[in-house]
Amino acid sequence: MILLKTDQQIDGIRKSCKLLAQLLDSLDGRIVSGMSTWDIDQICHEFIIKHGGKPAFLHYEGFPASACVSVNEEIIHGIPKRKRIIHDGDIVSVDLGINLNGYFSDSARTFLVGDVKPEVKKLVEVTRECLYKGIAALDKPRCRIQDIGSAVYEHAHRNGFGVVREYCGHGVGLHVHEEPEIPNYVSPFSPNPRIREGMVIAIEPMINLGKDGIIDMPDGWTVVTADGKPAAHWEHTVAITANGPEILTQL
Image (cartoon, rainbow, N blue to C red; front, side, top):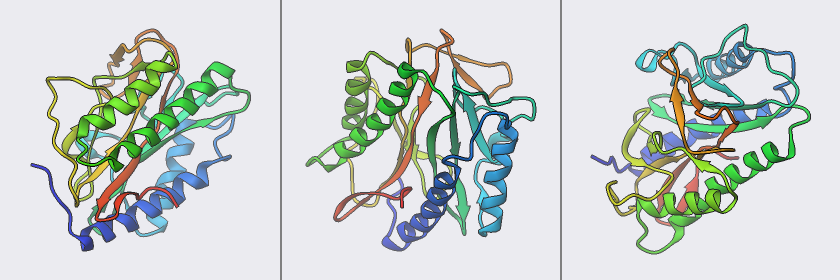
């Protein structure tokens, strides 16, 4: 069941999202060669607690950290570790959520560290463009969920990149994950509900430099590209209002 939010609920979700946007903005330039993925998680955890929130991902279905920190070929759900050191030329995807007074936000960005190869930098740029093209699809009259996936997939495919199919976006706001699922591609076998006022959704393209294929790692969380090439991940929480889509997780 898709949970349609009231204006009051959206306002609560908005506050959580703005706090998350502040956190992600603060990471720009702070993720540098020599630090560990555990260091990044600690920065995120301390920020959330300091500002009166709770890390939405910590212990969610057993996840052991506040942020998913995924490096290079790791697509999503990377577990922060003291021994996982960031190096010059890496890309680092940080995905996390905040529970602020019972309202949940969700957002992800991929950060460049030092001298990143041009083709990898392009991957990150195109993935971000895919996100905003997916959001723009919500502005069309009588649009549906698969209009998002169509916009994301077409842009990624046009640029020669693979699109992750096994994981997708989702509803959010009153829980970490809600219906509907929001794939980054189009399938006749996927539900395709119409976009309605009151929906709050997390749109999150996961795009691979190489092929679409993935591998779920033995730790039960980390997902990597099957060909070992880098992947990028961008995500925003978006509310559908009477005035159209509103990106909540940006300042």
